[in-house]
Length: 236
Image 1: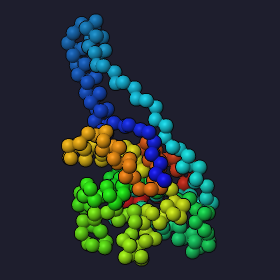
Image 2: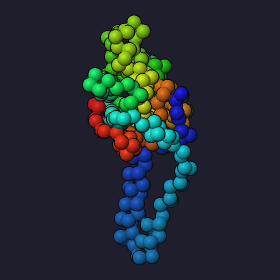
Image 3: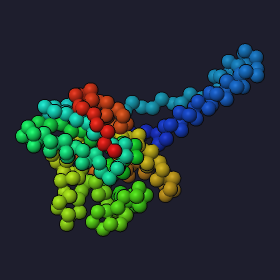
């Protein structure tokens, strides 16, 4: 089941932040040219940004980090699915060396920044041609991927099936996604296809891969996992 919080984040928070700084800077510049009373009025001129309603994020995923050994795999880029290979190899190592089962291991995969397309399902990849846009080819066709090759393996490629997000999730791995990156991608696509940003956000939420939980941002998810005892490795 996809865990999706009831959020409505701004698609480009960085732009909004710097926009506010620019407004304040302009007010300060104007203040330097007027009387003290006028300066105070100029500085107070910018309208405050309306506070956003509190967002109730799902933080319960951290309770699932309860294995004897814990690791968080940080993926800011897709890098040909390096995060999947790293998590799989880490689990295999404990199985080979210490005969440990999946239940004794807690792996957290954080998909963030430029890797966020990995969090989207096949229908979304096909509709918005994410394979071509992100220079990702389908191992089965050798052409630009029309599906998310990191989520599932091609039905005719059984050898690759264990090296997918779906397979790792089935083994108990925790899949986390960056809301900030997801909303940024939704905003970019909205501009490209000339659709309302809110509609694109809703569509994106509906097409997250099963089993993935959105965190406020990927950095938060990585550090929450570390607070829960995970050893960190950058997987990109």
